[in-house]
Amino acid sequence: PNCPVTRTSFVQPKLMFFTPAPASYPTVLLYRPAVPVNKRGRTVQTTSRAAINIESQQLIPVTALNRYPMATVDVKTLSEQLEANIGSVVLGKPEAIRSCLVALLAGEHLLVEDVPGVGKTLLGKALARSLEAKFTRLQFTPDLLPSDIVGGSVYQSTTGEFHFQPGPIFANIVMADEINRAPPRTQSALLESMSEGQVSVDGVTHDLPVPFMVIATQNPYEFEGTYNLPENQLDRFLMRISLGYPARADEREVLISHRQGEPVDELSAVLTVDQVCQLQAAVREIRVDDAIYDYVLDITTATRESEDLVAGVSPRGAISLYRAAQALALVEGREFVVPDDIKRLAVPVLSHRVIGRGVIQGARRNMMEELVLGIVNSVAVPG
Image (tube, rainbow, N blue to C red):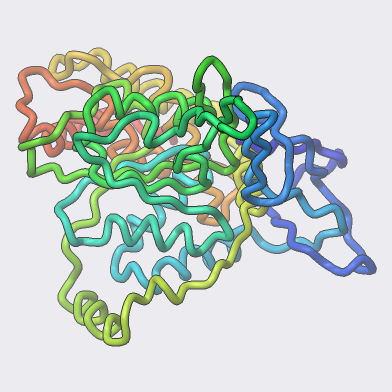
């Protein structure tokens, strides 16, 4: 979504992906890369990764798009390569991996909620290592400050001026471990970055690199020393998923794979950040029938009219469900969204966006998922 493209052909674009080819390779470009912009429409300068221009207070760690002819490759093949690369270290969790890819290609963020030790952080590290992208991990603690995340102005005695020092949020993949251990003041530092793709410090706006994705984790069973994420923070996450314990056979493979150390450290990148941007642009080309629009609206309306909910799904939630369905269709190699995409994604996309009536915190997740599932099943599926 942060890398717009300009169509140069009147032919209906197919779900094809472009990879570098020799200059003599005979190709016809369906897309021509345009100037990338952030979510607020500001132009993002494409320079070498991690290039920081302190004087102009910009950090643009994004490589320039390839300028030479490209050969076409099936998008499904590319997504399968990425999925298989992550699955080689995150064993027995294909649905969680696919959800992670859906969030990435939709240009949104992911909340992984589960007990410690089941691979939440591993999932984020595996995704980052599968991309030629910058990855940072933030361990949220009660004493973490907003400036520890977004950065701040540092006085330079040699020049007598203040210079902006970017924080760890300036990365393509940001792992926010135990996000609910930080106080609300620190949690709010992520709101602008997750929603707008930028941060504001001392009255100056700094664009984040593209693509940008936050993968946050939290333990749903431990409440001492934690701060519940507010509704507006939860609404910034495209999906909320859990990993669960692995099956016995998968756990056996986990033990065997760790004989020589951490397998994730041996992962090689299979995609560049520019290729991810092109995939995100391809998601917008997925066709959505009018019946699918009505199906999404029927579900969201049903949540707002439910007597079991204090607050239903907002328009942002409807857009998120729509965009996630497009991304899932692309991952599965389809040019169109089907009703089953909406039905599969409704619970992980919508359950953390609704507020139940008289629901205590400890039972909130399971009850919300059951309520949303019941509402989805009560809505007629388009024929």
